[in-house]
Length: 145
Image 1 (cartoon, rainbow, N blue to C red):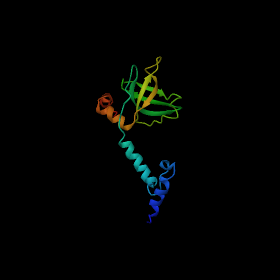
Image 2 (tube, one colour):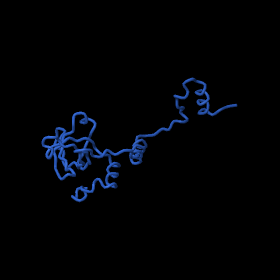
Image 3 (spheres, rainbow, N blue to C red):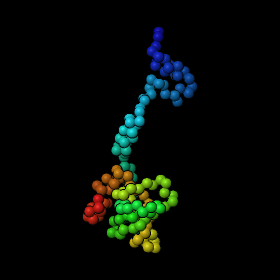
Image 4 (cartoon, rainbow, N blue to C red):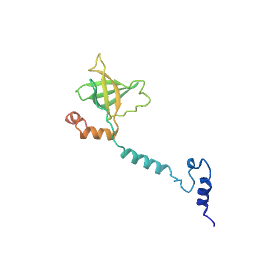
């Protein structure tokens, strides 16, 4: 009995002890750059929101108005203050922000009305959840959102 070449590779690999770690050519799906980008975009859109970080204690939500340079930015917060916020060193390389991003801001103990730290940046699906549940209503009243 003769087998087609792609099935021969399956039969041969099944006799090897490490066969479960090797994916035969017949079963591999070859995706180009565009297909991979499309798949990544769909995964982001279908991302399930498990937990959204909400403000605790003195923390407040804000929208980034302007980048000032040197890991500092101007943020308009829900408590009607405009703060110059810095991105702490532990988040500096991980947290990339743009104008219009929704951020979680923690005011400083001294000079808290003028200065603060950026704690967290919300993803677009999390912003939609915050909007649906009424956490961003004050931003809409100010005409910012």
